[in-house]
Length: 181
Image (cartoon, rainbow, N blue to C red; front, side, top):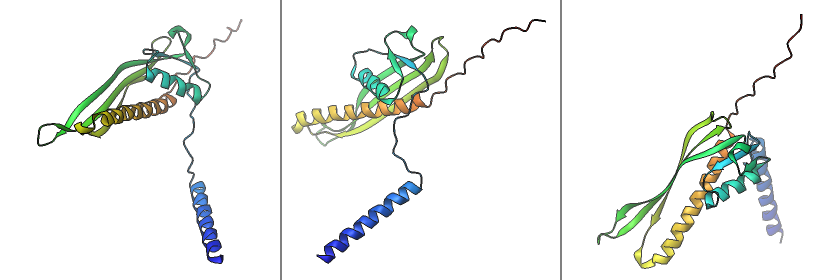
């Protein structure tokens, strides 16, 4: 019994020491980073899965509001491309596909109400490899759908990090009343 107690005690001490080391080096889990603007309009098909995922993430991230009209927003996210590709990587000896590469390419820019570019065109390119076996067609189709969903989640996270790093132009100073002589 004492050997078991001693082993538990050593494990707890090691765990405590590891957590102290992590805390001491400044390690911190990545949390929500607020966006540097109060409202945003997403210029993309509003009922797509990607648009819904971006809206959810923006709402969960802070106080930024997603507007329904571009004129109501401080900034507009303009999607210039959102393309999914499926490329053949390898064939087997019978000439059948053995491996695919799934790609998603997303290009966007951020502009303010006046159309001034806050963030120039940015590209997010995601890739996943998919081993393929035509004898397991249904399972491979489900795996492909899961990989595309994973890519979409990764895309939303990368987009949120880039949006949070946007530099908003400073507002011009308020005009001071002219001094009378």
